[in-house]
Image (cartoon, rainbow, N blue to C red; front, side, top):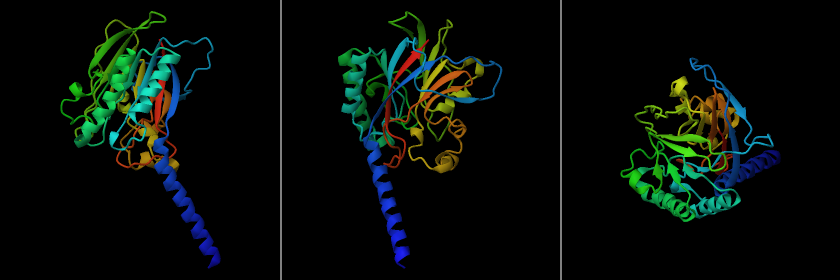
Length: 297
């Protein structure tokens, strides 16, 4: 009986530590950097999806990004211990270290539409910071944002859903398009069309759900894509159970594209873990993340 008691006590202690860590991890913030290089273009007539993991930062010493963006996603303001002040501080520090070409929000200000006011307060605080620093602030709608009324008017950023904005690098003079697509939500799932980008310049697509990419015709796929939505798994379990059971319909995560940088059939993709917690206020081995993304055109 003494042995059984000891074993039960150890398991209870480990379970308590696990729960405490799951509650504590959302309060941390991983300020990361990613350098995206153009991937070799694949056969435009091929529908095969190939996922290859890439390093977050390039080891090429002479590589200087043409554009730099501060990217954050999935605030889910109902449970986001990483408050807007910390994001604003990170933006200021990043801009001071190396001038930013823009701040980009990847969708999902809240989990439930009834809490939209809380999400708007968060995003508008970031917006005020960007205006103070003279940095453009862009954003798209996520799957939890689609039922919010007057989203574009209240968000505080330039909504680029279904738009393609021309950009010019201040360092190299190279040109690119910053394009965005809206999410349709989960109840009436419909994949968006790629915005028109004429002229042949590289395209940087902001799409909340990474799976958007595989529903774009191969010949229209962008050179780069920034996404969120997956929260890095939020609660990591062995054998990727969180995706095989809870997200069976999500194709790219079940192919290994959960967080970080990937070459996905010729498109360089960055997937952020996001900031907040969806549905449950826990994270495990998936720390909240905001990232300075450098793009080499």
